[in-house]
Amino acid sequence: MEAIQMQATATHNLVQQMAMRRDSTANANRVFYDFLKLQPSTFQGSHNPSEAQAWLDEIKKAFEVVPCTEEQKVAFAAHLLKGGAEYWWRSAKTYLQTQGTHMNWEHFEVAFLDKYYPKSARRQKELEFVHLQQGDMSVAEYVVKFEELARFSPHAQYALTEE
Image 1 (cartoon, rainbow, N blue to C red):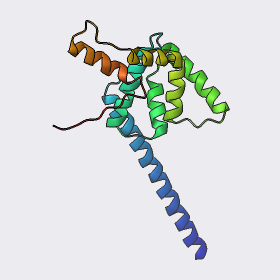
Image 2: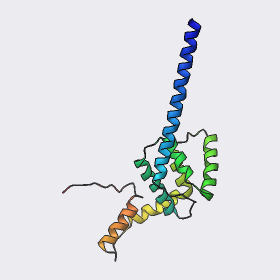
Image 3: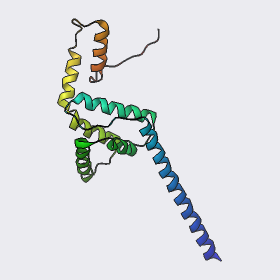
Image 4: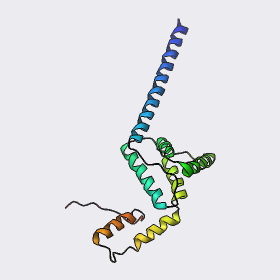
């Protein structure tokens, strides 16, 4: 009788585990489809660092709307890489994994920026921000340029105040 009870308990536990796996998979699929509903752009690779940064910003904005795990963020972003960018990521991912790097969003973002927006280009934008002058720009044009370049400077901090 005890053997039958043990078998019943084991069967019950197995059924619960299978149901949990099914629910987990269904949830992951639902999150992915919610992400795709936002119609994020694909990225083919670009020699223009601003295009790479714009794509990355768009993806990060989508992650604010569709909460997902760090691993899902990497998988979803990688799904949007096409052409040369896709080939680069396959190689970079393999290399990082052989180095024992856990694939999370932070590691993806660092690798992506190192490839498509090198530190030298980011530094150049930061210097452009530091030396920005209004010159013959209108105030509105200057504000737009200031806000565009401010994201490249670690010293630029926005303080929202209510009047």
